[in-house]
Length: 228
Image 1 (tube, rainbow, N blue to C red):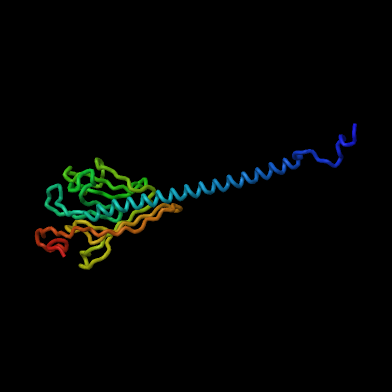
Image 2: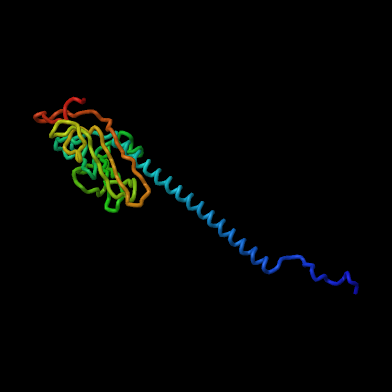
């Protein structure tokens, strides 16, 4: 056998050694882990952005629905036939009024509407046809149609701006009862549970109805007579 055919002691055969393979596998695993972490972070950020977008859309939708109904509130005669006039039955935590129905019910069909927060923390706008004869002073909503607006509502606060019966001056009030005229402004505020990222911009609505019903009895009410 010739010397050229003998393997040279310093010559390396082609391929990788076991150590090189282990190092390469370790590097590959590290790079894969980094890529997976980046992809997971992007997915989480995208999901968070989507949830924030959905939450913002829900709030905008709720405020749009409330604004449209409150702007169109109407003064009415007590459906029980007692001759009393009712504009709004409003407290700090609930608002009952009448307004044209939603498009599905016809633009000119008056509905009784009631906004309240349920014990579960849902903001719900209830409605029932005005001609159905429900006693709007009754606290229950059995038989009313429920339109959930938002969930996870921790507190609800409603205020009314108009003539204070005691002072005769315009002021914010925590209730609006027994009036023949709607308030000049209605303010709706609410809050969510601690840690909830949603934010409710204060909703301030001016009822468009400026019609005052004729004064009854002695005509001394601040809420009847000619519209201002």
